[in-house]
Length: 318
Image 1 (tube, helix red, strand yellow):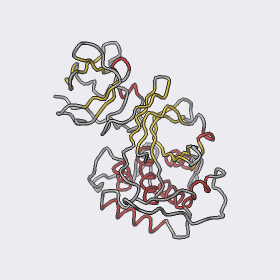
Image 2: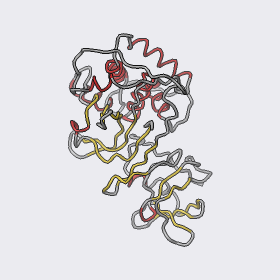
Image 3: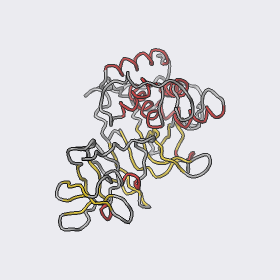
Image 4: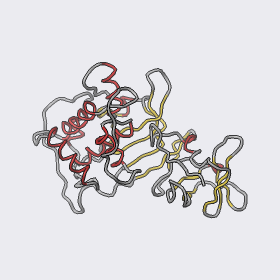
């Protein structure tokens, strides 16, 4: 029996629904639960058929045993098409309009220990780095630092990194900037730069988790947008900032859009702030500079048209 390949190509989670729909297109029919999957000969995409011959719609279906993705879930949308990436657990599916659906996977289990009292930023009179109001917004966040990533190896490495880049006098804004700088100046994307890459020291953990995506960057020295976003999110959680990851599309310099993953943070007033270390890494690389902050805490209104069709949301704490 052929295996279902894990949907994590070069941009991993940031994949459009049309592509996600082929996740099970490896054989003509796969029996699952009370129905089965077929390959539509007209579109070559997978559709879910109920036992009565009708196309199942608007329901989660679990991938059967015998496959790499077994036990995970896919969501069946209009006319029986799979419209999401495989997920660890079913979650709310949001109709984003124009045929685009997003899965809200709010699966982060903790923001610090149970009953933990929040920490607050030291105050800073320094100016904003790029966008007015970003420092004030960040410094007003109640912080619940994560005690552990679930991996002793990753925890130890993060402790070492923070000992090098974080000082007690930093406010929340500057702590996040230090993490952002560290990612841009320490790691590389092998599609744009050459360098040694080895995954033999990446600690074992859930390969579908954000912590694993982050560890792959920290321990291998290189990664793509998923890894940069995951690494920044994990570092943010260690500080106590409830950063989360979005998967969708970002604009290309030559026109059009490409699948992408980045970080977001919701402000108290509902404003969505963008943090995209991978794009800023590329902007710095192309300009010959050490760093860029064009996407560091950018209010979504300031980067309108740069991001679109958000199809997945990861690690957003309710």
